[in-house]
Length: 116
Image (tube, rainbow, N blue to C red; front, side, top):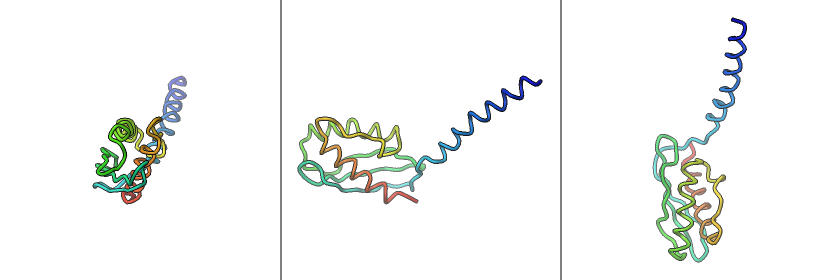
């Protein structure tokens, strides 16, 4: 009996930090939000979709950068954003730095509108 009590306490202590962490994840208002920021050649306009308080999609609506750079940026940024749920943890793409930084900044602006 004495051995099971420490095991239960250890399990409880290990689960506590996880529950604290999950409550710190940013929650957003459901909807679709638009953000704008400067890319390499022109302004980038993005749309960010929130469902059940989580980021479910992001897409570029307008841009003046080359298609190749924008595709490279979006192919990396969107999956990373959806996985991490935090635009501040998403890195710019090498070779498309200014385009991807424009997308990141536009997403940040959109997410500001989604805060409760």
